[in-house]
Image (cartoon, rainbow, N blue to C red; front, side):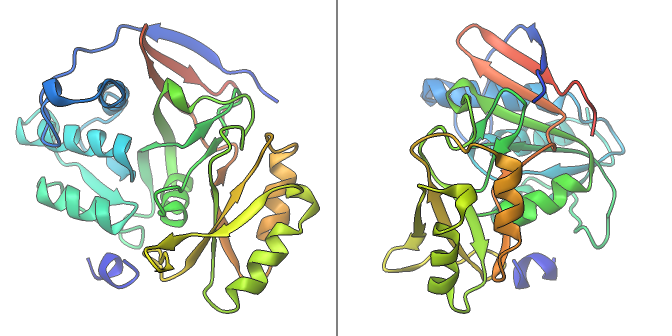
Amino acid sequence: TSCYKMLSGKTAFATRVCAPRARNVRVMAAQTMSQQDQLKQQAAWKAVEYVKSDMVVGLGTGSTAAFAVDRIGQLLKEGKLKNIIGVPTSIRTYEQAKSLGIPLATLDEQPHINVAIDGADEVDPNLDVVKGRGGALLREKMVEMASDKFVCIVDDSKMVSGLGGSKLAMPVEIVQFCHKYTLERLRKLPQVAGCEAKLRMDGGKPYVTDNHNFIVDLYFQTPITDAHAASKAILDLDGVVDHGLFLDMVDVCIIAGQTGVEVKERPNKK
């Protein structure tokens, strides 16, 4: 508990399954959900089918992952799941899971995770993703890298032809020390040429992560040409903690759309 409060080209194979009917969950009643939230719930509930009793489960952060956490809590309460231990990826998820009675641990206590379930901000055809617009990218990456299987859950609005293609933020977590210097070095990297770099703000002050760091959001007008090269170049900068490019990590991506729920699996297992 103290850990959270203190620090608190491949082509994917696809199959289709029927979309589950939206039902009531703790977060909100189905009849009051937006259409997008109903899709998020469908993807989340399908992902929870990968969770079996006696598993250690990585609990993601964000609006889609919250539906999965709720579902796990519901199944535990109903006795359909037993002996689950959750490893939260943020203080926000820790508080949600604790309120649902899900037993919790940190990576220090449970370094081996059976399955992690989390959302994404962008998903490309290779099942590489951008994450971290909710600010939890470092803990998400640590938990998901420690997992045997990473199940990513999205609605179909998150699909892009290439990472950065949504023109929305690709976050980079940086230390607070000399953050302007680090921001300028990020902006000038040839591997992310043409991006706009902005310090994320929370009201009139810089946004602070659970790890007491800042976030620089990179905005692209066109998709990143070489995401692996960009990843390495960003990580090589002093002052950078991690970034929101989650490459070669997703094993299964569950995509909810109007025609149902699509399950894509990475053909070459990590």
